Image 1 (cartoon, rainbow, N blue to C red):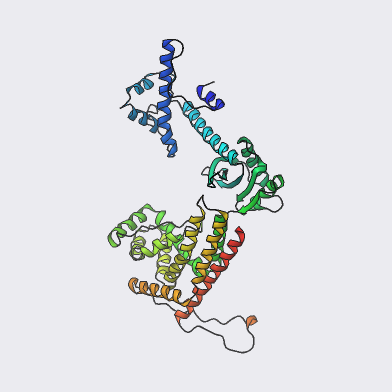
Image 2 (cartoon, rainbow, N blue to C red):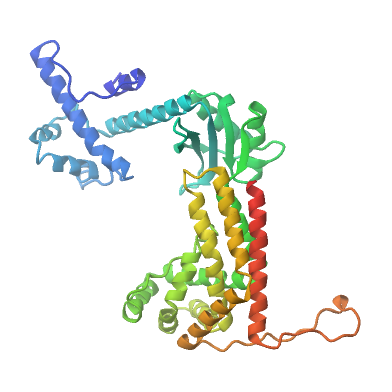
Amino acid sequence: MSQNRVVVENKSVLPVLVPSLGTRGGSVQRLRANHALSMTSSCLTPLWANQLQGRNRRNRDGDEMDSNFHQLLLLKAIDDVTIYDLFAKKQDRYTSPKMQNELLQTMALSIIRDIALSIREAKYFTIMADEVTDASNREQVVVCFRWVDSDLKPHEDFVGLHKVDKINADTLVAVLKDVVLRMNLDMHNCRGQCYDGAANMAGSRTGTATQLCQIEERAIFTHCYGHALNLAVADVVKESKMIRDVLDTVGEISKLLKYSPRRDSLFEQLKSSLSPGTVGFRTLCPTRWTVRAASLQSVIDNYEVFQEFWDEARDIASDSENRARITGVKAQMEKFEFLFSLCLGECILRHTDNLSKTLQSPSLSAADGQQLAQLTCNTLERLRNQECFSLLWSKVSGMQEKLHIDEAVLPRKRKAPQRYEVGDGQGTFLETVQDYFRTEYYVVVRDCELSGARGIGRVY
């Protein structure tokens, strides 16, 4: 059994130096071995702490001398020439892949033991879990623990990723029970559960939260605030045609720009000449709804650049499909309705993005999270007045004149379906474009407020 395995089982730490025991020769070898092990661990620790690979490349001979780990060892050899002895030896070099994996496992187990000891001292804890598909298309379950120390300071600790074959409730419950058992914790001391609102997690009959409540009924389930907010914002976008259309267009801009290095390079050249001080375009996230305000703001900041960019991008497009897509996006950006919807969407999503960032703080309590959500709803409610609309209208009108956007026009008048008509009175139509966009503004803000209230209802 290697020295590292003994360290793991005895719960001790690796010695940097040992006293002279036995014969002189054996003592010298022991000192050299400990020094080599110390040098190896001191080089690997910063690499792993910064998520860098130790064995990332090989030379033509198949040797790993060009890897990050060996290059860092050679750098340390400038101050400690004894490191060269490691490379001169054919065995017991303490640099093999097996030795590196044992050191990594030893450090990981040491961290897990420290976390488990702290949780046992605090006694009560909350389980937090989520499932995710990694780059190799494998399902992984992320497990974290939240606990409060004796100074009433909350902690959130990540304890591992666990690969599973399926993500039904029974499998997830088995994983969580196994993690609790391995950390020598008592499930009856669990006082909370935090997952998303999926059926396998929050199902009322056989969900993960329900099954754990059968073991400990005081383990209260809380729908993750971040997931609840994400669902609320998604409801707003689905109910508002203006916001939905502008997000679809910005998503198309992301595909046209970031999926083509040539177009991306052209955009950077135009930005450096037309608007050198602005931030570049930020790609629209396809899945998360609470990180989109920055993308909309980047389109507003680079609007003039995009106007020049589409003409040149269409000229260098090699196929008719891309030319058609570019022409369609350019036509949308020339409309006043798109510019108004873009500014309105950024105004609303800015508040939800700020709320999402605040809810991710590990030190935030459940009561504080509910107060922040209610505060955001109150802020959105205060947007429903003539003063806020006038400020937005003035901003958009100024941009429309500066960017030479088409004038705002009223939509074509349409009669209501006959089944909705009562009597023989005439239909009511808005007379000015400002009245039309004011109505749309109030509808979007109202829908956002109502969806926000539903989102808060999910977290109570």
